[in-house]
Image 1 (tube, rainbow, N blue to C red):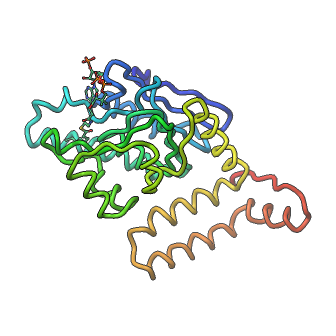
Image 2 (image 1 turned 30 degrees about the vertical axis):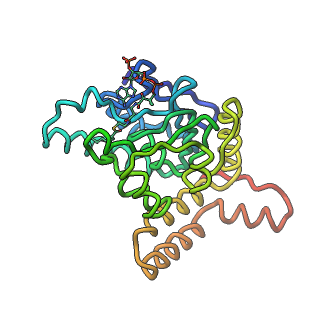
Image 3 (image 1 turned 60 degrees about the horizontal axis):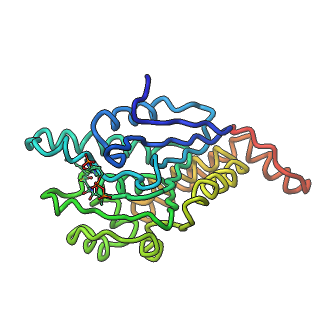
Length: 258
Ligand code: CO8
């Protein structure tokens, strides 16, 4: 599939996916969402870390495309929300780490996209918000679900009910992002983090992601049971034997991802 709105760059096992709709500050229309859906479903098997960012210096993603939503009826609104939610869930459940490098506005669907990623780092220029109630809608790409999980209900409700837009330092303070950097350092820092992950055992990272992602919504006994199952699976891998043998032999491990 040729992508009209996605720019993809491969750097070894790191893939950088840039959302590119400059005329609308990278707002997500249904074509972009379908391109994203296709990209995620067909992601190159050599990719071990995915970094998502926005094209240009101003915006990560300025939300869902308001011009496409303005005349939707109830059923169409529901369908559009389902499409976005499905795509973001597919990103969230990829078996590899996904880092959002938030380079500018992350509003509405843009904040929701960032939240579907495993880790968010941001430019000091980034701004975050769920301004939907100012448009007469609620966050519809799973923001009412993920924002309270990430930052707690109290502040999530304040952000969603007031539609306030917060700066990157506030996003850092409330734990919405892990770190903030000057704009020119954002992508190098994202790549540095990705490289730290590449040095580790890929299957173990995937299983840790599964344990965190699936365990979070389970009760304690089920979550701990799931972790135990996945922990056991590690011992069926080459990389567990290699990682532990390398430690005991005082050398670097040579992980194979199996
Ligand atoms: N949709 C469509 N076009 C947009 C969007 C958007 N979300 N954001 C910006 N644009 C367009 C502008 O209309 C403008 O177009 P034009 O040049 O043709 O006039 C262009 O991008 C540049 O924008 P501005 O001139 O407004 O740039 P500013 O620097 O003045 O302002 C802002 C930047 C603050 C980001 C401003 O553009 C803005 O407030 N944008 C809207 C942000 C917003 O409300 N986002 C939430 C959208 S709703 C949403 O995401 C819901 C997700 C769930 C959907 C569920 C489906 C049912």
